[in-house]
Length: 136
Image 1 (tube, rainbow, N blue to C red):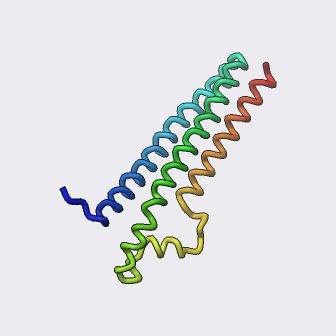
Image 2: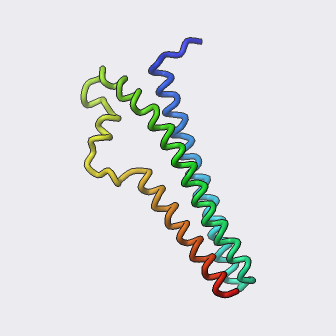
Image 3: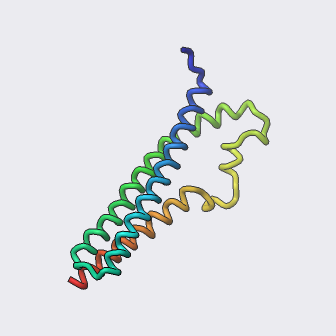
């Protein structure tokens, strides 16, 4: 099977973009479950050690998925330069990666939203851990 340069770059980009979104969706589902456990433990007034463990779990979960997301972004960045070169032969209005780089609102991106959620979850986990320690 012959694989063209363009097809190789695009398939790599597409696979990693899909994996990034799937990982984030999995993170959201898992964090909803973890947050639910925290609120259930608070409602039932469980032992503070449980809160420390749950808060630690929420925090570690945020850190692990932040690392996974950073790796996915790096893999996407690797193919982006090649795809920009492929776009060089296209009309200016069809150079999507170049146009995306030129946009004005750089903070309106998946990365900004993902990182905000990771930081908020980390802070929440640390807060629950601190609360559990203070009640212990």
